[in-house]
Length: 79
Image 1: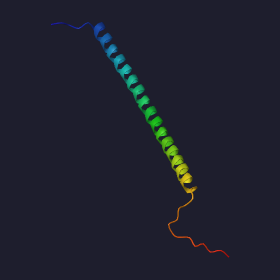
Image 2: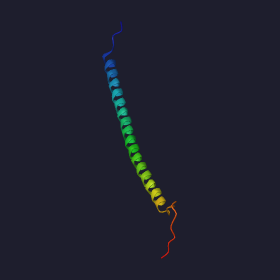
Image 3: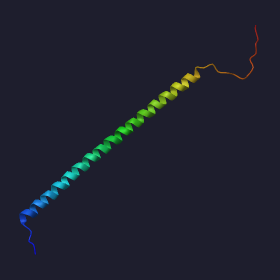
């Protein structure tokens, strides 16, 4: 039967602890990037909606400046 060396066991536990801390830090960084990207996409979506509304208003205003075509006959009465 092999008896573990106490120095080896302590070093192994320390390495496992460092690996867990490194993984938690990496997971935190990834989470921070995901949140930042979500916020950026949300801002871009809002900006796109504002641009779309501006274009719709511009197109509607351009259409209302045109002379309306009436299908009813006009009376040509002169005083």
